[in-house]
Length: 132
Ligand code: ZN
Image 1: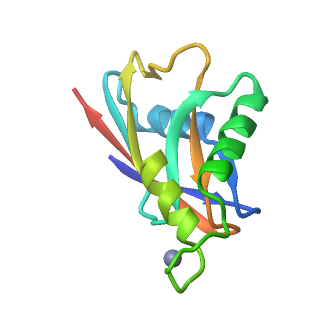
Image 2: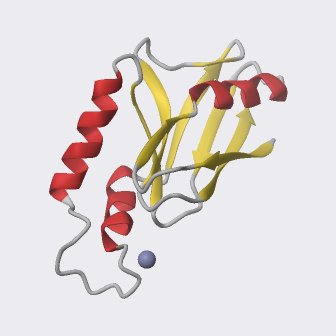
């Protein structure tokens, strides 16, 4: 089963918690055991799994990436969004979570985040559910 998850971002940099939306797709699939593979088909966005309990964690990640890769620097890319391309590579454009008894096997503090680095834009995440 393959589904597209739409993500509309409002700011240049934004991390959207998509955990519940992904679990809903797993529920719809009816798959009890398998793998949920998540793929972002964009060059200036990414996806990552990290803490979603304390919202300060995602703020710290965003600020640290900004310090490491500032928007303005001596980049050559004419479109002007080189920082977003570099952040996309660092964060990565795919991840996966095992499914057990119909539930994503995330840790207690883990959530799945879509990472926008050049918003606002209409984005999508490809969600592929593979049954055992
Ligand atoms: Zn570009």
